[in-house]
Each structure stands twice: as structure tokens, then as C-alpha cells.
Image 1 (tube, rainbow, N blue to C red):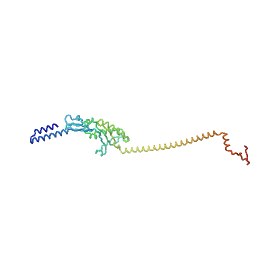
Image 2 (cartoon, helix red, strand yellow):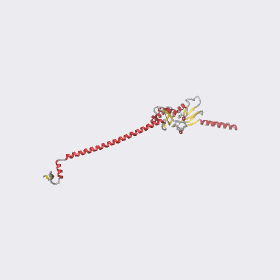
Image 3 (cartoon, helix red, strand yellow):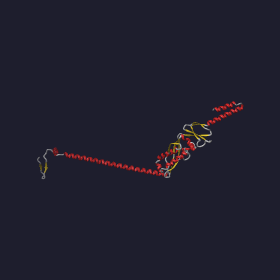
Image 4 (cartoon, helix red, strand yellow):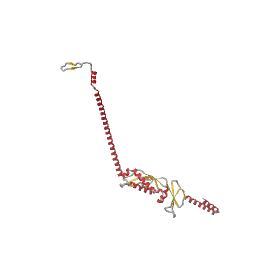
Length: 304
């Protein structure tokens, strides 16, 4: 700013008449140009970003022409300053045009039995701040151009590596396991390139050939029918066992009752003696002499 003031002061001192006016105007124009150049060579790197100052010309142009910067950055107007965001980014790869892409970006992989399976993916990732310069040196592209090209290629390689271990049917039945194994591979692949993958998820069901889906559904239905029959057989067995236990209980009750009656009769028999018999006779005698009818029809009196 001191330089601009000196230019204006010198122009005023040396000005006289119309020629002096032109000098003042020229000085002001020079000051404006200088201020414009200075302001264009200054930029603030926002929070959550890493600034990269790239030299486009000169002997230093090449692999070593990228330096990191933070805060207010001053750079030569003949260089290009690029910001790499380091906060979490979300990228979606889908065949659905409503997700922001005009082209089909679904992933297509080949299974162990040679069938093609497709699916949609969502990924959250960020750039490791200390890897931003290295990433730009290697790929020479801003971040928004990397996720749909370089990163997608690494992801496709990871998905194919995992899918090659499964048949189409196994992949369908073990979707969660496939997702977890693929996520681990993607984190490993992209981690080596300086990207920190937070999460990778399958957005919907795996898309398999219709014939495979029909076979899987038929097997599922068959298993469900078999399971239902097993449950019915188990229920019948349970009911039969219930009846057996009920019969056993009734038989046991009868046995106990018979044993009780037998024990009662035994004790009753043991308690009967000749004296008891005579006593019972006396209790039942009505005081009359016993009379019997003989063969001739006469009454026979038995003396006591």
C-alpha cells in the first residue's frame, strides 16, 4: 500500500496543467492494476480444506510443483491454486438417473459360476489432509473428478475380487457378508491411495438374472414347505406323546387304586377272628330259637 501512495504523491508533485492531470490519472490506473494483481494473488483456504498451489510454468514445473497451504495464501498470479476438501464426501453409484448422473453408474460383477450381478452403492469418504498433495501429484485432477473415475475403478476391482468367491445364489443368500468383505477391500484399496473410507453400503437388493432368482425362490418355497411339514409332524408327535402320557397316568392311577383296595382287604381279613364272628352273630340274633323245615314238612326245633 505504501508503494501505491508513493506513486500517487510523485505524480502530484510532477504534475502541472493538463499534462499533470494525465500523470495523476496514469498513477491512479497503475495503483488500481497493482491492487488488482495483489488481490488476485491472495486467497483464504476455508476450514475443512487443504490448499494446493500449483506451478504451471518455469523450471520447477513437474512432479514437485505442488505445495500445501492453509489460511491466507499468497501466490504468483501465473500459478493455479486448488482447494482439496478434507471433510466427508458422499458419492452414489446407481443406475437411477434421479441420483444426479445421466449415465448408468451401477456396479456389475462376475460371480464364480460366470453370471453377472449388478447393484447400486453409496460411499462416504474423505481425503487424508497429509495425502492431498500426493493425490494431486499422481492424478492431476480435482476431487470431484476422482470419485467417478479413479476411485470407482478401485471399487470395481475390489467388488470383483470378492464376488469371484461366490456363486450367484451364494451371493444372493449372503448379501451382508458380501457387503462387509467388499467394504474391507475397498478401504484397503483406497487407503493406500490416501483416501479414508468411512462407509460403503449396498443401496438395494442385488440384481441377478431372472432365471437365478426364480430358482432361488423355488428353493426357498420348498424349504418353507418342508419346514411346515416338519412342524406338523412334530406337533402330531407331541399330541401322541400327550395321549401316551395321559394313558400312563390313568393306568398308574388304576394300579394305585387296586393296590389300595388289596391292602384294605388284606388288613380287613387279618382283623377277622372267631370271637369277632360270634360277636357279629349275637348282634344280629333276634332272641328266637332257630327253626328249620325238615324233609317231611314238619318243623324241627333245634334246642339251644
